Length: 239
Image (cartoon, rainbow, N blue to C red; front, top):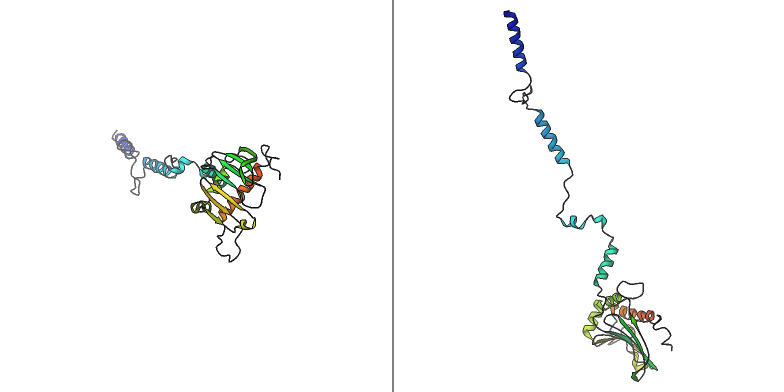
């Protein structure tokens, strides 16, 4: 009986010595570390959090604008900017045409606010006598391939043109009017500048034509060519 009691007591002590204690906390490992299941689980959760993808940024400028890969190319942005600069309406009346020369009639053109194009032919020496005329609207900003009012605004905003108008009245290049020649006259509002022939090398008193001013002259001559070929004007200004 004593042996059975002793054996039972030994088994009981062995059972109590293993497993967990203190409410389920794992025993300390033989090497003295507290490598518990709970701590391992916590470490795994932290590692997962460190390597997970951060939440999207909804406050930065890039986030509000969207992914840069979705933005159009620079040429499209440039087009939008050019269109935005166009007011679709000239601020002042723009007039142009040749002045001087031994001619029977004088042609002149104008664009008045906002896009009204007018071409007139008058008898030389009698400016009040209009022999022929036609009128139509210049194309609106960004419309079609032909010159439009946005193109006109752009050439007038050129720094060379703005500087020339600030000095108006002024003549650029040579003046052949003394020899029955003509100059190109450009007026914006009450200011007028004139453009003659290119200055020869070393010519005294000849003011070279600024590139932006020459560009404006070429543009306005081309605008006449385009508008005079339309149904509203074609055939009215034959020589």
